[in-house]
Amino acid sequence: MRTIESYRNNTAVENVRAAIEKAREHESFNAILSISEERALARAEAVDAGEITGRLAGIPFVAKDNFLTLGDTTTAASTFLENFSAPLQATAIEKLEAEGAICIGKANLDAFAHGGSTENSAYGPTKNAFDQTRVAGGSSGGSAVVVALDIVPFALGSDTGGSIRQPASFNGVVGVKPTYGTVSRYGVVAMASSTDTIGVLTSTVEDAEEVMDIISGRDKKDMTTRPDFFTPVLETVSPKKIGIIREFMTDDVDADVRESTLAYAEKLRALGHTVEEVNLTMVKYALAMYYIVVPAEVSSNLGRYDGIRYGRRADEATLGAVYGASREQGFMPENKRRIMIGSYVLSSGFFDAYYLQAQKARTMLINEYNQLFSQYDVLIGPVAPTPAFALGANTEDPIKMYLADIMTVSASMAGLPAISVPAGVSKDGLPIGVQLIGQQQSDAELLALAKQGESS
Image 1: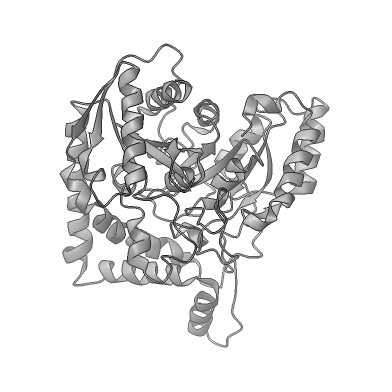
Image 2: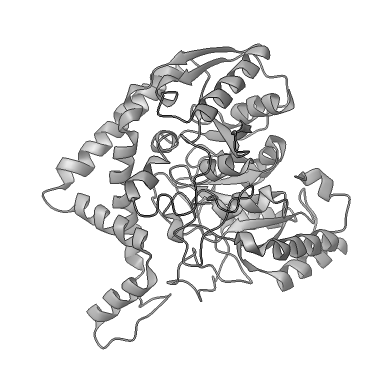
């Protein structure tokens, strides 16, 4: 896979044409939903003419199709928004374009980012970059695959409970979920507002570091954003105290995944870091609390899709019928499932029993993470319990699909930065990633450690 630096040897037009050509050559993977050829080439010509400059001048990239962009539709991989043309661009896109980067197209995802395999897309599943009979992961499956196939050097994704890290692991690329609030969510289709984060998928940690440095920082349009604290670490990484999460290394985890994680831990030891096992007892409840809190927020955020203001509108006679038919036609089954769960746990009589208890458990999880970070600098473990599973293997059982997120949701619930880095391959030749988790606002230090491990 090519790095950002390698693209600087060519003209912007050459870069864009090559990326678009390669995207079309790999159509069978169904990783890209649309290509913005006219706008991308116009920007490339402006770069070559010196009219557009910046740190990423002439570098092509792809955005997950829940980012609002100009010059193309933003569908969120749903039929509800199949003809929606955004009137503005996401802040992350604007920041990249201000530095000369060129968006060539939009990547496939689970509709409205609800899923862990990209099989919930209204436009068909994205296939794994290493084995087209396997899933790409989700919901940022398309973003991971376009990087793994070397179509572009980086892609934007969103991570609510593992949606960047898990597909990064399944496709052998780097996936960064930053501290909650590091990158503006303005202009990105909302899923769950208390855990949604904007991150990047790249072929190297160094490239991830460069892109994160550009897109992070305060945005007056998103009140959850933090002041810009992200500054790449340039000096040598000091010895760290690292904990392997024992609950992620049980016999229920695939043997190849455990071996790759332990091998990565040995690499860190060889670099002078201390590595030992730690307990994170609340993590066994993380998936349950996630699938109460997140559907509750999903049900609220999807309330705006009613067939009246924008998006699909059913041809019905009454207002109530328009609402119902538009949602029936526009939402995928997984969208409806999460709306129903979320509405249930927020309803009178069940709010205290489910939603409130989940939020209390979330606080206990955060406190346990804080306790561990008073003793350890970084925590590590697998990203997922298995390598990429077969297409269709979990589609009939939502619980099995949800269990694929079991190792990623806890960092999301606590608002922590977490990075998936390639750590090996399975006996079947499938990529395996390891997850590095840090305390809030330690993103730069976490990337520096991952970069050290990558170069060793």
